[in-house]
Amino acid sequence: MIAANVRRFYERKEPFRIFHGSTNSTRSSAYPRQRIINTGGLSHVLEVDTKTRTALVEPNVPMDRLVETTMKYGLVPPVVMEFPGITVGGGYAGTSGESSSFKHGFFDRTIKSVEMVLANGEVVTASPTEKADLFHGAAGALGTLGITTLVELQLMEVKTYVEATYHPVASVAEATRKLQEATADENLDYVDGILFSKNQGAIITGRLTNVLPDGAKIPHFSRATDPWFYPHVLEKITQNTCPVTEAIPLDEYLFRYDRGGFWVGLSAFHYFMFPFNKFTRWFLDDFLRTRMMYRSLHASGHSKQFVVQDLALLYAAAPKFIDFADETFGIYPLWLCPLRQETLPTMHPHSAEMEDDGRTPKQMLNIGLWGSWSRDEDEFVRQNRKLEHRLQELGGMKWLYAQTYYTKEEFWSIYDRKWYDALRAKYNATSLPSVYDKVKVDVEGEKKAVEGSWGLWLLTFWPLSGLWGLYKAIVSGEYLLARKSTWQSIEPKK
Image (cartoon, rainbow, N blue to C red; front, side, top):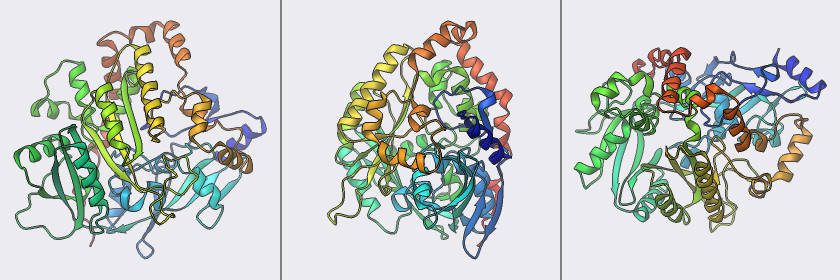
């Protein structure tokens, strides 16, 4: 059905977009319904093979359902996105780097093959040995080379706990040094960091284990009565000047940032002028998980008032960018996540600089800059443009899930357009929107839409937009998906 519908669009030379049923992007999207290909039904784990440690998965399987299924077989994906609602297909078409990506690379590096429907309706399989250029090029290309309909995913043996250690750091320089030391340690499986300010932070290292360390406490973060992860880490490093170790159940670790969306959920308390404490977090827990937060963010229009950007830079440039972010935005905490680079060319964030061996790309550091900023749209755009310019000066790159204000010339000075256009031509994808078409923000168009709609105009007033976002989130029923999650109760098969 999908291939036939795509073929009809191709024959009529009409562009179309793909609707997955959910999104973890902060970009606004408006497209005629009659030009939508709906892949929402492709949401099943079809097979888990314990001998080859692989799974056949449809693209709209979210991370929590994937983990729930594979853990029953004693297996887990090497890279699991921290937000339960991010899908397998989204992880391939987008850029998904997590705390295990210093070791395994982006999520797409754990994929063995994909089935795709090309823009002309042809169904093909792509892998490192078959249509390798398409397999590599479609990763991070936002579905602009075809529609992914099936994924063969590599899995690894599950362990019961992540032995997590919180290393206090007192400066940006100490944080980046500690990150580089940690990523060089072959015994570690997970590494990330949180900067609470320029002078306080934690580098968090994790090691998979089946053995509960002597005296280790077992925290949980998924229940409404549990703490959010980031205040928990802050409490530990504030109370202790030495590293603190805990044994976190693996599933709890994988989705530790879901409640509160790292820390972006705190902005909702500020917006509604509501107290932030253990009781209110418990009472509002359904609304403070990432699926519901994304629904509210889009419906309320607040994505146009939030700086939600992931920026990847070489380690040498990261302190300069953090200085800039501190002076310009003053947003904290910041997330730090080391990344193993992809092979060039790629639409993922990348750098051409190599290690001393001349063959290995240098590791990059992702900086998560997420927080409310300005309700003045012009000022918001100016600050985002300022961020883009400074990032480009430092040789860094954005992740393309967020607002992008580059001109077309600026955008293609960053990415390899010749390579990308050649791929699109080879695989008959020129009728699809390009990556730039999908990520650019039409500032004037959005202003005109507000001016021409009483409903959108009313949403510019406090607290109507926030209340509307909550209403739409409730109507969506997304909170039920979190309530139905069973990964917390699964005992991994050994």
